[in-house]
Every structure is written in C-alpha cells, then in structure tokens.
Length: 444
Image 1: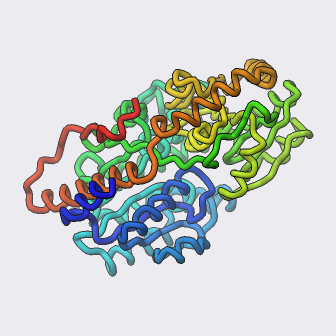
Image 2 (image 1 turned 30 degrees about the vertical axis):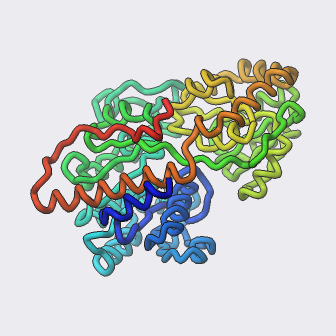
Image 3 (image 1 turned 120 degrees about the horizontal axis):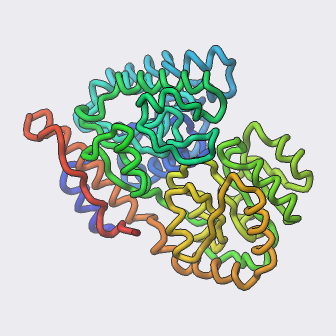
C-alpha cells in the first residue's frame, strides 16, 4: 500500500498545501472527527496543512502536528442569542472576511480546499470566500445540507423520510422542520442563499459522499451526478481486542444529546426495559434524559481513551437517529470493537449492518418496539456473542481504514488538482460521468 501512495505522490499531481475547513477544531461530532483524521493523514505524509475552523481552535494536537490553525473564534449557533443565530447563520461576516484574507494571501495553484462542515458556525459565507478557487474545492457531505434545507432530507413532524424535491412548492409549504415553521423558513432562505453563492454544476468543485446510498438523494436535491464521488469514512475501532459484549450489561449511546439523535426515546426505552444505560456526549437534553430515566448514567464528552474504557463495559451500542443517518461513524467504531449495534432504520448503512449479522435495526419513533429489543438482547448472551465475534473478525472487510483510506483520499485530491489545471487550460468539459469508487474500497 505504501508503494501505491508513493506512486500518487510521485505523479506530481498532489496538492502542495491543503486547507481543511470545519466548524469545529475538536472531535465533538462525526464531521470534526473525520476532518481531524484527514489532518492526521496529510501531515503523516508530509503535506502542508492549514485548518480553518469556526470555533476557537483550541486543539494542541493540531499544533503539535505542525498544522497552522486559523480560528474564527465563534460559538455554535445554538449557544448564541436568537437574533445572532439568525444573522450569523445566514452569513458569518467574520468567517468570510478571514477566509477571503487567507485565500488572497496564501493561495497557490497547488492549494486544495477541503470543506467538512459549515452549518453550525461558518455559514454559507465560506462559499463566497472560496469563489475564486472553487475548482480546487472538495466538499464532504456528512449530512444533506447541500441538498435539503433542514439537512436531513426528512419530515421531522411526521417521522418519515422526505420524498419531495428540495425547494419545490411541496417542500416550501411542508412543515417538516424539527422545531418550527419559522425555522423552516429561515432554513429555506439559507439554502437559497447557498445555491446562489455556490453553483455546483459549473464550479468544478467535487462533492464527496460518505456512503453510496447518499448519491441518489444528493442528486434529487440538485447536485449534478458528475460532481459526486464516494469515499466512506475511515474507521478506527475503540479497542484492538474484542470486547466480550456478552458478559456486559450496559446499553450505550455516543453522540450529541439532541432531539434528532433519538436520545429521549432511548432514555424512555431503557427505563421501561429495566436495562443499564450510558450516554456519552453533550447537548441540551441531559436534564430531560435524567428526568425520563433517573438510573441512566450521563458521563459527558469522552476522548478515545475514555471511550475505550467505556467500551469494555458495553453490551450494545444504540444509534436511534430520527432522520436519515448518512454513515454513523460511531456504529462502525463499536461493531469493529466487538460491540453489536442497534441502528436506526433510517440509516444509509442499516441494510449492510443487519445483513452482515453485526446488529439489528429499530424504528426511532417507536419506544415500545425498541424496549422489546432491549429486553431480548439483555437476555440473549448467545446472540450478542455471535454479533460481537462477527463484527470483530470481519472488521477489515466491513470498513475502510489506514493506508487504504489515505490512498483513496490522495487519489481524489490528485484528480481534483489535475481537473482544475485542465479546466484552466480549457481542456475539460463542464460535465463528466461520476468516477466509480476505487475497487479496493468497494464494500458493497
């Protein structure tokens, strides 16, 4: 594998510098975890990396790796006043100003810009700043905000996937937002703004889907097929040895403590089932979880060392996301550690997790059904052991990690630089057929 990576490097098409752009500089959610993993992979191979983030940039690991951190110094929209969130969520002036200055002062023909997440702090303003270099931009779609106003391609009020075309009349009048019609109206305005700023059809940018199942949904949201490529998220198990899950009793949640993650459903279901529950993460619903299930253990945010310790006590991970889950990195981190998974039936990876025999699915709007599944799995040591052993033994075929992921990422980077150079020579048409996933990464 090292030889293949060196071959890509020797081709001379790799960027001489990569600017990673993300709301967060710390591993607080899936997108930030992947953005930081990207920084790690790039610096390990000697590429120059800048990290442009919306928060305060307080990540010493980035600095230790030689990454230049550029922090906007803002908080999550949900932590600000309503008026501030409305204005900054539409166009974060500070983020745009700082990113424009970076592009003006540091851009080179070999600089590539990789956007991971922008909806919580940075806002669509970053696309305005990236206009002059858009043919050297890659946007990883960790969610559906590039296609759908509410980011989930989901009707939250009905509890079902959305089938409407984004920004169609049916979409505009639908009361589908997780909170209110007013917020839906704001999200529509933001989506229209983003589309006016960012023309994906003709910009030369590439959209990187994290699962094959996302492509059709993104296309329906107006993203041209020729702009989409697929690179599944890299997975690093929590442990290097199998967790004997059949000996444990705790049912675990890892992620944001928010409504869309289904944490209140899980709190209610674990209470009714009488099984131990642990919640790892931060969010607004901590007190409500405790009220629904006083026996639930809320342990806050944990780094990888903390997750390894908790994994040793876990019987099953529960991922009851109440919208379309694009990948669920935490599910794969768990199952490759030997921890079975209960995955939302709305997850893009639901079918393969169930088919591979490493987990079961749940409807995140039916606490009774989830309760019955918890009761059954709490008693069935043999089934838990079977799923645990299979997930751990097949971890290398279930996921993409290490050098294989690095190679695919470098191939995509090289192709983007080459395409940008060709566009500027006038040697490439505006539309291309989508490039199929690299055979070494075909997990389907």
